[in-house]
Image (tube, rainbow, N blue to C red; front, side, top):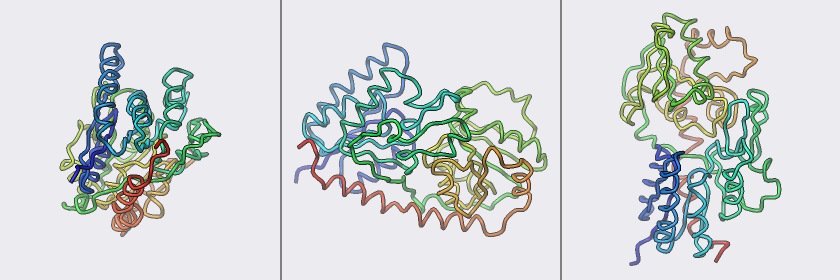
Length: 353
């Protein structure tokens, strides 16, 4: 029997990418992974494009389909060869590839550059566009209010003919489950913070303000990379951790009582959903997919929410919210839904055949 192959190209090899690799392998596919880290220096940038050119041909010929996690430079050549060889293709949109935020200096549509023009072209080359939340297709009004962020692929490309499908990410609930005793008065946030822009976009200043206002609580920021944070300026009750493994994250989620998602721009946050599966009580900014994830199981806030209301929620310790949070994610984002989406796409004919 001829092996079933699929090419997946990405610029970050995060947990959600690896989850899709595992999911496709569980469906019997051999996954050819093209990982092109977002290097800015000319030599590595050129080497990435060279790899994508040759691997796009070599893998593309052998594959039934080509998938691109996020839309950026790394997407173009594999998608071009997919169209050339008549293969099925899709772009999975996670957030930055559907927004423009001059205030935060963020988003693929932020500047009129070759990068933006290429991203627009990529959206026409593929057979389907998958968005992890519908707001990445239609736009998020609250994000415009919060941070002057314009969003929604159809807002930037109103005449786009490529079908857009909402396919949320999925979560392994058998792994992400409570396995330690919750510690009271503990608040966690997880973010890959490598620069000041990410620090602001992830809502860390508000998180630090909460720590200062609640000295009897313990606050943890996990995922701090190379940014220079003046730890002397932080309150004593806040802990900084580097990037964590899955097992370490599971332990952190299980120990902490609350999970904070203060992002100003986000698609459907994986870490929020993982934390909720581990029965953290969620708190998050009411933008993009965050309200749909949290629902009535936690606390949603905007820039107009009085600070004291957030403090009050943390002090009240709502009963049963952690278990409600887990049940909400189990019901809303089952892994079977994403499996079915992959199977449907792979069983359909390419529009380029």
